[in-house]
Image (cartoon, rainbow, N blue to C red; front, side, top):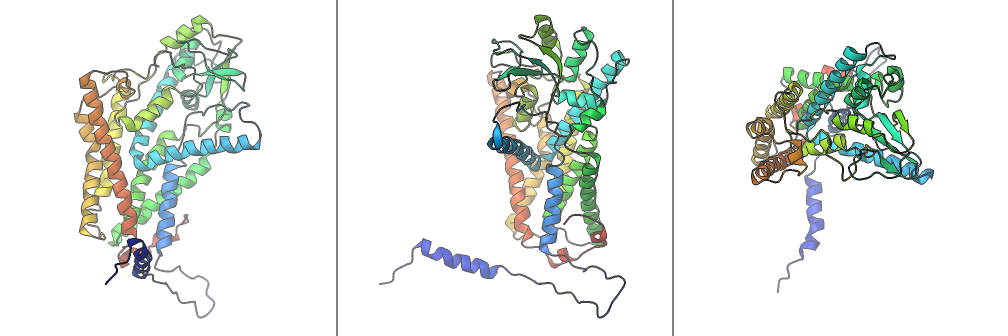
Length: 458
């Protein structure tokens, strides 16, 4: 009688087979026979060099470009070293979420950065036009800081009735905060609630920033080096790894994001009170805040950007209680708004550009025909995603947060949800193929170019 082994017993044998199939090549370079004034580097590169240089560039494209809103204020919450660890881990986790979104859709971050810049420039224009005499003068940095939630109205009110815009309570801190935008500050200044613009200089705002021009310059230099490296390989007809091609796509988006965010403070953690009230915010001030018209954030990428829209419109501690009115963000799309049109077109162009870079790998070497077909289908979908959305009815942000319930509106949201989920699936398929093909690079991919002599991180 023949007894067949159990599948679990065969698993170690499969690992042995996989280990034997994994092949390595050890590079050996000759040492100079005598002393020389200059010895050139090797004309080959290893797998780890390709991997680390690409991953570091992607890290620079996803982590260092982050310019999130002012986070929830700690005040005296979670005291002690355990609180320090938990609060630090919370901030790191928020950064990782933003980095993950950037990895999946960097073109969406380009769209948000464009919206932030245009909104800040609009606030700057109005401040300069109406209150140019105020000191210190209002700058683009001030507009960015305001739209990030840096300026607040602080109150010691302990509870807020439903429908109020008084800041949400931080029990340990003893006060609550209402975050203002640049347009909020403009309206308060127009009505005389503020005697002048916030008395903080541009240098003081940048002093709160967690990044500087040198750090940005280092990241941009690494990104530009990756572009030069890939361009040189293309000019010489040398094979390129899919990971390197993806790095170029990220580098192109990151360069645009850096340009849009160059004057924006990076990760300021503390706020600047412009008004302090003992008790409730006075009703006239509440009326001005309710009447202040906010800027729309086009929700072209549907649920992918809905999380950004919620955070920008309902930050923790911004004073919007569960029963309060929806902020000005939740409005219908206004195609007469030039900012809306520009942001939508920039987002669509960035999506097409990002996907088109991946389409250039159409005839690359893949481990199998199935891998090549998967890459082609995924890259086509990513490239055509935004143009297809532009052909569909445009949903409002209010629809995305579930305020409108008619069958037609639900149908639009379901269509957007399906397309967005397939977009995410296509991006995940591309990442799988990127790292799978990395183990099957052709010999020419390991030939080094002159770009390796340029200082960079690898």
